[in-house]
Image 1 (tube, helix red, strand yellow):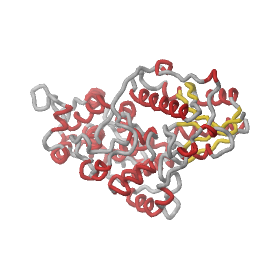
Image 2 (cartoon, one colour):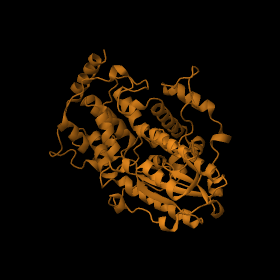
Image 3 (cartoon, helix red, strand yellow):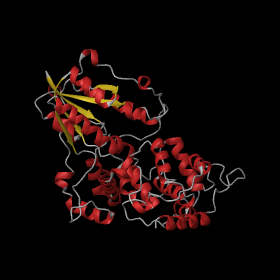
Image 4 (tube, helix red, strand yellow):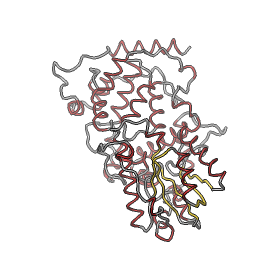
Length: 437
């Protein structure tokens, strides 16, 4: 019996799933499939908490599929080997999946499409993790926007609530008569131990929309790091697709335009990475690709560990190291301190965040790091330097956030600052001014 595979990646849910809904409307039964990609997993440390989160979500999907009368197939392999084996084990009519815009993902999907095409198997991708993607929002000259304000205006002008807020009918169609199950001998799924990982849990908050009260006051509370419920904590669920971006958009549009603005930023950075994949590893601005960044491994390590002697930076980095999450205001200050006050290459900071953040999303992370460094496509002045002291006075005036994560602050045991903030600022601006000529 021919089947259609639906390949889950950044969409670990059955509800409001664009590609899954399309697959379920074909004539063949659909077998949900998840691949633990060795190419990605082999680069991760065995205590990476994201694998525990990912594993639990896949197991949840497997349970939901079984309850609906079908099943879920999961394997641990490289991508092409996995699909060669699927072609051998199953009679495939098609493989459906949702788009992914990162450089590795686009190359991976092109290779899978070629392989399946050689065997007469249809490969279809669908937009699901963003509202607008690729070339959907362009300038009047047909070029990608590089100024967020203009992009935001064009994005909002294109928005059609009756269409863009509408959920895909995957939940309604996800029923026994439309589903397939793995072969009896293929029903086992890899365990965390099989994958080479231990169980390391970190708090993520429940999947689903945040409470309406949190969203309603988001613009007033989002910049106060000491508030426990000042942000939505949606980022990890948007990253792994355990919540629908369309549902989040609808709620934000109704309750808080500042949160809507963050959704637009997310689309913007994903669009930029798709158009300019080289920015994952190098500056967008050619003038900023050869800056004389300092080689200061001891200072970099101190930054990683939250031992800089700058309290708001240290609080953010310790929160990151202990929880896999860093409040956005502390994230801005910590990143700015590394690339400006210490004048250390932004790619080192981006890499460290990529290892620690539960919600790590390449497009957001690269976009924001390049914005802080003044090297990106977004028009952020390279001479802008955030003062950690001013930021603390404005957003943590009572030192509540700092004292939570840096309990020795204010005692003799707290580290002396790695650099005089004024001197570090002047050093960076002068070095950038000379280096970009």
